[in-house]
Structure formats: structure tokens, C-alpha cells
Amino acid sequence: MEIDKDRIVTQEESGEAAPIDEVEGRVEAEMKRAEGRAKERVAQGLGDADLEQEGRALEEEAERELEEEEQG
Image (tube, rainbow, N blue to C red; front, side, top):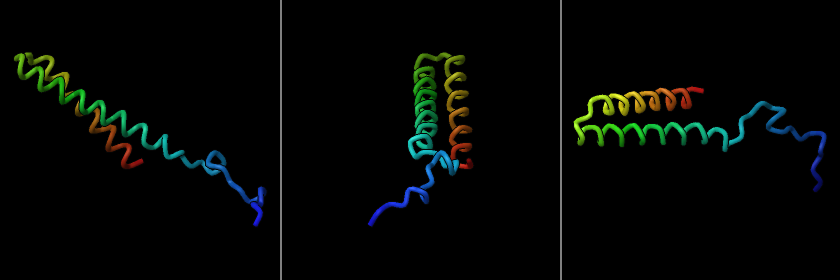
């Protein structure tokens, strides 16, 4: 059986994202969330309110990015 090259549609032609591209955004957001949690825990141990707030903000940003990844 031969492949009919005229009937092949590439991902680029169809506009479909490559699976690796879909995973990459989620991995980056998960890493950002982990970094935010780590900063928050360290800040709590040090009693540094500014660093704790920075950690929370980073974690919230990651949560928004994960929600966007799930929706789009």
C-alpha cells in the first residue's frame, strides 16, 4: 500500500498545534507555581512579608496561565 502524497495534510496546513507546543506552556506555568510556593514558604520562615506577597503573586499568575491553557 502506498501513501497518496496529495491527500496528506500537515499540522501547519491544518493549523493544529504540535503536542510539544501544547505541553510547553503548561510546564512553564507549573514551574512558576512551584517557584511561587517555594518563595512563599521561605518568606514565612524568614518573616519576610514582601517576599511572601511576591510568592503569592507568582502562584496566582501561574494559576491564571494554567486556566488559560485548559480553555484554549
